[in-house]
Image 1 (cartoon, rainbow, N blue to C red):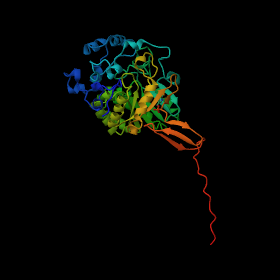
Image 2: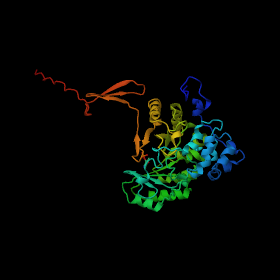
Image 3: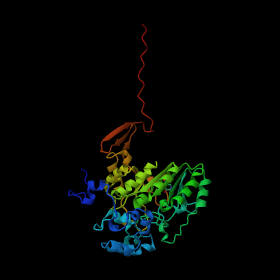
Image 4: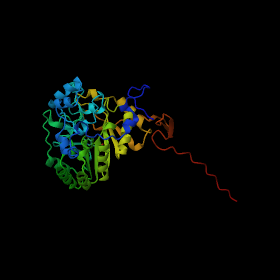
Amino acid sequence: MHSVNLTGDKEEPPSCLRWEVLKEFHPAGKGFWTDVSDTDWNDWHWQLKHRITTVEQLQRLMPTLTPEEFAGAALANHKLALAITPYFFNLIDPADENCPIRWQVIPRVQETHTAPWEMSDPCGEDSHSPVPGLVHRYPDRVLFLVTDRCAAYCRYCTRSRLVSNASGYDFHPEFDRQIEYVRQHPQVRDVLLSGGDPLLFSDEKLEYLLDRLRAIPHVEFLRIGTRIPIFLPQRITPQLCGMLRRYHPLFVSIHSNHPRELTAEVRDALGRLADAGIPLGNQSVLLRNVNDNPGVMLAQVQKLLMCRVKPYYIYQCDLIAGSAHLRTSVRKGLEIMESLRGHTTGYAVPQYVIDAPGGGGKVPVNPDYVLSRNADRVVIRNYEGRVFEYPEAADGTPLVAAPKEIEEPELV
Ligand SMILES: *Cc1c(COP(=O)(O)O)cnc(C)c1O
């Protein structure tokens, strides 16, 4: 059996890193909130209203808070807000300082340590924004930001300059202007709703946007980027799915980083979206201490397929200010990609990308499988390291065999 081991030595890995444990679909359950009724617990409004948003609440629920976390949480409301849904909070292991869930949502004081190469807008979105809330970087598609709110806040958020409105960015999407821009640009055939999290909107408000976008003849394809299925699976109601299915082709990209996030509740929520005919993709961010481990990532991508989700992208962590403690190397990312391709289902293998610092868009980065190109062949290796040759001319034309000599027909 695969065993997953952070240290690479031969010892038995801790139970949270055992393959069987990573692959299991546990229910998160009510955990700390056993007294709450099922109706309340399963009501997404109840979950939002009872989010953990202050250092005092955090300390009460988790006396094992480290000094770094305490200091980070105390500062959080001056920058990117602290918010964790009760459902997601139950996935934290309070006894484990290195819990991968904990690192993603509990602030640390290291968020205040910034380096000159870090940025508040690492992907250069503001400089590609023709109207507020719209990013038009690629020729045929736009990123349409609908809100600055999320169900919970990821500490490495690439849009923390505007998300939760904590740093005075004063984000105000202007739907009329955003929609008008799309209407006047016939090359835009793909609109990606994101934010903040679009699924925080009521069904009615979201439908209003989808309706207006669908009314534009050149908009072929709609998608929603959301972490709600992971932070708040209760939001994925049959009513929401029934509404979304009227706007096909509509894809949903979720954001999940660790197999422990893929609970029984999440699997059911994703199943409801898939049953509404919505193709699902996942975007992961490569994070130190969370998923910078080939075994963890292998369990993650296989579990995603079991949730009917195609792993879409793995992002190198953007150079967001104060994220050094969560970033890991490109070398590590390449090692993870190497450990996936060929070793598991092709559908399970995402594309590893770096969103080019300063605003160049997503750049694919891949392990090298082409070893050399010669005058008459390309030399390649496979996932096991075995070397093969593919014959072709240096200019890329197929090699053509010299014509066989045609014998004169004999006259009888
Ligand atoms: C990621 C992104 C998109 C979508 O890119 P795909 O590769 O098509 O998924 C579009 N616009 C912006 C600004 C983006 O960052």
